Image (tube, rainbow, N blue to C red; front, side, top):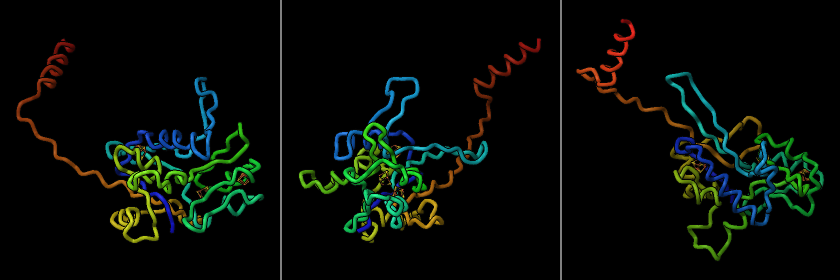
Length: 231
Ligand code: SF4
Ligand code: SF4
Ligand code: SF4
């Protein structure tokens, strides 16, 4: 199995619900707590496994805002695992999830420097490295109904921009979404073989403006104001 996520950048509206649901689930789960620093202070920060970046592309009027959620890609050739001196970072054989064993982690930060996706989060209070677990304590929970055995971020996304499943299964949601929209890995040239994929934003569909024969009320008032000002 190769478990991972597909994120549809066309549907993502940058609402951050996935980041908050992730924090909520994991802070009370096996990776918890996810420490906050100065939560009510002037420069709040904290441990988040999923962060949404926002980019502006193109130039006006052809510009577009792209919201880009990023979490661990569960790479097949994970740099974070290679560099870890204590063996705390490991990739599971059975499903490909990359995890950190808190008992072995000494908080040296090597893995964070090695990860090209900025996916590692050092909990400075606990001195332990933490990261996305694909909600490993949720997706196998047989007490949950089958349709809820998905990562918290996927369950909460209001625009259904996130898919979860096994990339080795050609009929899984992630494989089908990736096939249909030509899913892409982030920075494949680096060679770490990220499992997660992104669906590119589609081109804008141009809509024709209706031509108005009569000047609109707004235009009439504007013209009148211009005349008055000139007087
Ligand atoms: S919850 Fe969905 S729409 Fe909101 S930021 Fe996350 S992926 Fe995007
Ligand atoms: S994204 Fe970073 S933390 Fe996740 S498996 Fe790849 S190298 Fe490791
Ligand atoms: S911070 Fe922990 S997981 Fe990361 S390289 Fe050091 S010992 Fe390994």
